[in-house]
Structures are given as C-alpha cells and as structure tokens.
Image: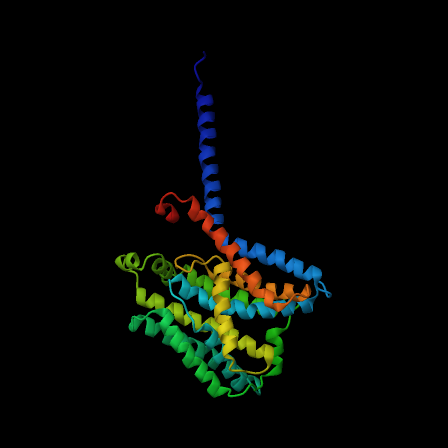
Length: 351
C-alpha cells in the first residue's frame, strides 16, 4: 500500500471538518423548529382552516371578508397576548376579560368629539389598562397572593367599574378614527393586523429579548432556581401583569371602534377570558409556565375565531362550536406533549 500523501491527508481533514459543521447546522435548525412547534402548529391550523372558510364563503377571498375576519380575530388576539405573559411566569390572569370590558366602556365615554379629545381618550384608556395591570401585579407581588384569586377578585371590581360607567349599553366614538382603526390600508391590508404586528414588534419582541423578559421565563421554569440565581422575581411579575393590562386595553379600544359603543357585559368578559386561555394553549404556551410566546397565542386566537366562521359557512348549529374547540385543544396539547413522551431524562428538556 502506498503511503498517504500530504495532499490526501489535507483533503480528508477538510472533508471531515465539513461534516460536523453541517451536522451542527442541521441540529440547530431542528432544535429551533422544535422550540417553535406550538407556533407552527397554530399557524398550520389557521392557514388550513381559513383556506377552507374562504373557499366555502360566497364572497370568496374578498377584502371585506378578510377585514371582517381580521377585526374579529384581533380582538381575541390582543386578549390572548394579555394572558400569555402572566402564564409564562406560571400565573394566570382571570381579569383580562373584565379589563377588556372596562376599557371598552371607558372609551365609549371619552373617545368622542374632535381629534384632540379623542387622542386624550385613547391615552386615558391605555393608562387605565396599565393601572389595572399594575394593581394586579402589586397584589400578587406585595401581597404574596395566588394570581388566580387576586385576578378573580379584581376582575369583579373592574366589572363594577364598567357597570358604573355604562349602566346600559350606549355611547359614541369619533367615527373617522373608528373607521381608520377597523378599516383597510392600501392593498387591502386590515389595519387591525398592522396594529397587532406593531404590538408584537414594539412591545412583545423588546420584552422577550430584555433581561426582565428572560427573567419571566426563568420564573415560569423554576421560581426557586430563578431566586437563587438572583433574578428580580417581584419586578418581573409586576411587569408581566402591567403588560397584560396594556394588551387588554388595546382590545377594549378596538372593540369600541368596531361597535361604536360600550357595554358592561359580564358574559362577554368571561367568554374572552376563557377563550384567551384556550388560545394560549393552542398557540403552544405551557400553562405551567416557562415556555411559549405571544406570536403563538395570536395564531391560536385566529384559529378559535375561524372555528365559528367555519360553522357559519357550513350552516351548522353554533352549539357545535364547543365540540370543535375541544377537538382543536386536544390536538394542540397532544402535539405539544409528543416531546415529553420521547424524553428519557428531564434534563433533556433544557438542552
């Protein structure tokens, strides 16, 4: 046998060095896709269901159909975003629906008349949402109370405030502003979708990448370990509920623009609270905390809204909606649990 030459050794070394890098790239991609499984599942469900809805709708893929679906989905999407952040910290905010109703009633009183009073009304509505979230967070952090109990109690208070503002349905809103908020931009893009994208880019993404946002995930994974690592648990939890109040108030603002009025409706608030939890689950966020995100919850919200649209176009009884909702929830939870079935060691979950 001939001795290997220097060139052949170099070529073999180069070929060997390519394979580990390629394998590492594929491994990183697989890990990233696995981490985004919930978002991808929710996106796939929404695309397939919405394509079926548009295909069966008499108007087809028209701007009116798209805009109407976007406005309805955006309402629940904002409330689902509000629910997501407390859930990441292993909490639960049962007041999101009532903050949604309260800010709707407040907006129907303040967003009237000329542009300046309307702008001040928008600021007041968003400030009210922030204040409600801050109260929830302060009671959870300073009072060291369970988030479910705190937000159940404060939700009743917020609904009482909504009843005080609107004992009966009514009110008004600046119509040009409302039409802009619920209309379409050039090219038929619904403004509600642009508003959702802006909320993700300017609020969720900076929060997710910030130190306090990473602290929220650490708390949800293990609060004891986060505390031992020096994480500011109180500040992270407080900000989580503050942002929850902000997103809920954005939903209340959008609802006022859609209905041109306000209504203290307990059934509406409770329904949105429950559906927000469902959207969080469909979007891949664990109710145990520490994983997930707002983008998946947005797609989860649109999935839930599309279920009702499908029942409409297929002329089915609306009473079937809970059945389909339960099936979608089971499917989503089942897919997200497949990883757990393959785990041999709990340490693998953190690799």
